[in-house]
Image (cartoon, rainbow, N blue to C red; front, side, top):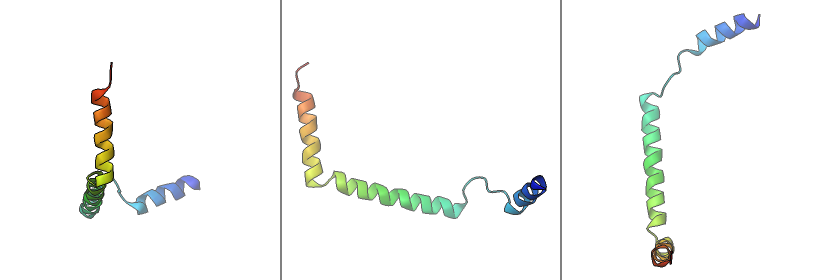
Length: 63
């Protein structure tokens, strides 16, 4: 009985492999939005100063 239910469910569900065009569009918009927020955060004054300090300490350190 379970095998029959599973076979019927798989037939009704259809083929759901891969993303459709609309899913690609939504994924692309989300990636661009995340990238723009990340750029704003990294280019802000406080984060920029902190990154510059880390790089200066790393380059001026003794080995």
